[in-house]
Length: 189
Image (cartoon, rainbow, N blue to C red; front, side):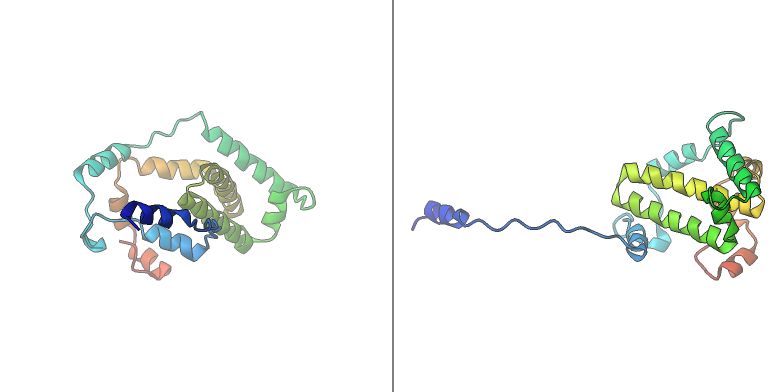
């Protein structure tokens, strides 16, 4: 048999189509995927330095944050007001917010953590629509945490305003060492 005949004979046998596997991303896999994001070739994690173009883009991005007095944040203020009103009503049979707040701070914090993990999973998987939906869930549960802790949105806006023009690296480095000890980690600067 000649070369052409062998090629034709080899292609005549069809392989069965591979089944698509459904990938279930767990919290551990999501964390692993995030940690696995590539660094420049041959650069150890401790010595990684972003390329000049990236540093310039970050410098532009780190320009002072302008928090407008009116605009989209009024949606967050309105949601915070609603959650605050639901808490005050105490109507646990008709209000998810009241029911969640009645279960106490540990449950409120747990729900925020769950939503954060769900958001990470959707973002890592590249599911844009689900990432938007999980982002909204995360913001809602963040506001529930604020209401539970007695934090007004204006306090958070003031903290963001305080940080304007400060590098995130410099800001974290200026934090008290007690935060690092309380976190029981050496991962923070």
